[in-house]
Image 1: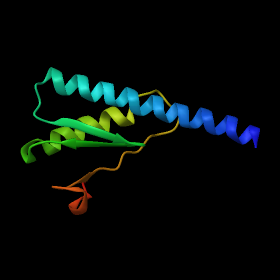
Image 2 (image 1 turned 30 degrees about the vertical axis):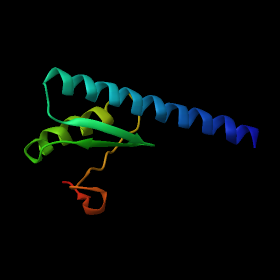
Image 3 (image 1 turned 60 degrees about the vertical axis):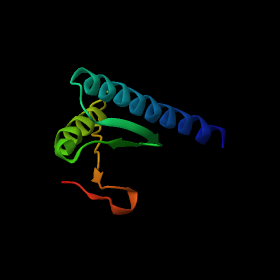
Length: 94
């Protein structure tokens, strides 16, 4: 059990570092462009945003890029995006 805990701690810590770095990058870029989009909250490995409907494509591109490239890794990070007026109405965004 101690070995499993030690490995798990590294994995979870790295995931936390990745999401924090992505959040900082997204926040900086939203502020730099005076975007109307706002990052509302983080839930585990998910980020929740609010933005006008005309800004969705731009926000998706920014968030997806920053989350997938936040840290240099040997394995790809793939980000799935869902969009909706509320959590009940979200649908996969392609």
